[in-house]
Length: 332
Image 1 (cartoon, rainbow, N blue to C red):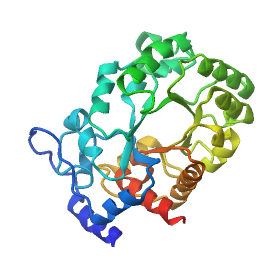
Image 2 (image 1 turned 90 degrees about the vertical axis):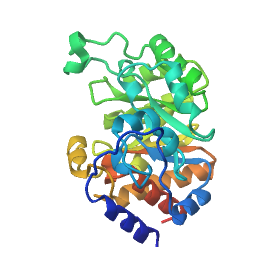
Image 3 (image 1 turned 45 degrees about the horizontal axis):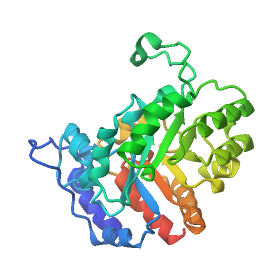
Image 4 (image 1 turned 180 degrees about the vertical axis):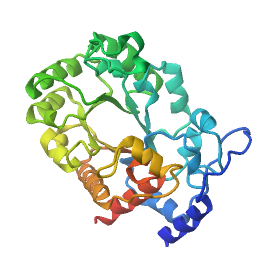
């Protein structure tokens, strides 16, 4: 019944409609009773959500109508957080430049106390060398002197997070892009020194795209610092259950997942194929079951579970959240 109603609803959005003129506020879409029931049944410690929230194509699914992307970015979070299953979200803009505490506080003020954020750290913390890309200006291709600098991270990343959102508002994510980071053992040692030098309080998470770096030494470094591995569903990486085993994820204070891409897909390709992100264009039941396994394991161990889903995973993050919640609860 739930899937039939969702299909009926999605038939209204076979094309991307033109945004209506801006009016005051962003309204939330009314949810089917089946989705409301899922929200009541899903355990409180399981936080699911999107990589962000500013997609006009989510009209009828999350928002009551089509709004401009800029308006959703500024004002849409409160309506997003009214969805019974959207209990968390990623914040990506912090990856490109530091964000001040007052800006983060605006997000905290419009969501329930139980809502959780996965906030990316400024990439100056995690790039050994700046990529040869125009956005890095005169620094492109140069060695990064701020790489794994705990003082810079504490001042520019941790302090605004704690002041703006609160130490218990979710997790700070240090995402390491594919790059040359030395030997697995050497990287683990340097990562441990960095994490243990950061202020205590927030949950710190680490995401890797170099699969060879996920070793027992890496897991030990995280455990010793009280940090978490961020499991990522991505074509470059092993199955998230394998990541959990290699990294010893059961020792972390939280289980964190980012479901990013389907099998064999590239980010840009998926974005072109799946826009405007209002349907499950490429269901990935195997990936969904793997994420659900981690959620149930975390729930059984009494660890909070936070999973953000990108539209590029299956085509529509809010619909992926519904399917994932059903899979977690069914035990399939």
